[in-house]
Amino acid sequence: EGKWAIHPSQIELANEVFSPPDEEVTKARRIIEALREAEAEGKGAASLDGKMIDAASERMAQTVIAMDDAIRGAAASRS
Image 1 (cartoon, rainbow, N blue to C red):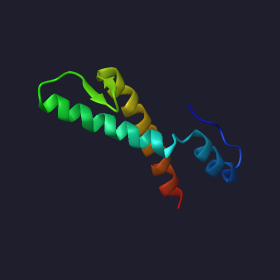
Image 2: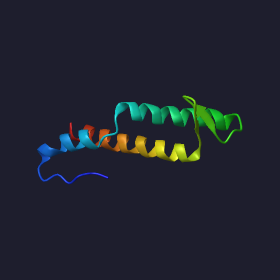
Image 3: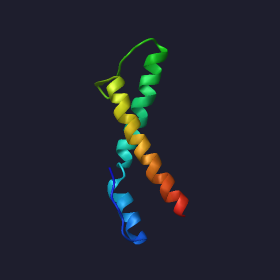
Image 4: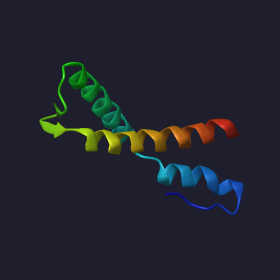
């Protein structure tokens, strides 16, 4: 996912539009942490905020975190 920018002045707006919301990133990090704790207890799934999470949830969370890290890293390299 992303956007091509013709002019560098468009990059900041494109990053803002395509960045996952902070709440989504926070939830993704919570999912990863909850699953790590569950794995340490020998469980393959966990409950977070009353919902079951598992390996599929982890993959989606990792995607959100990777996108956030990539956008923030690119923004930091331009500063």
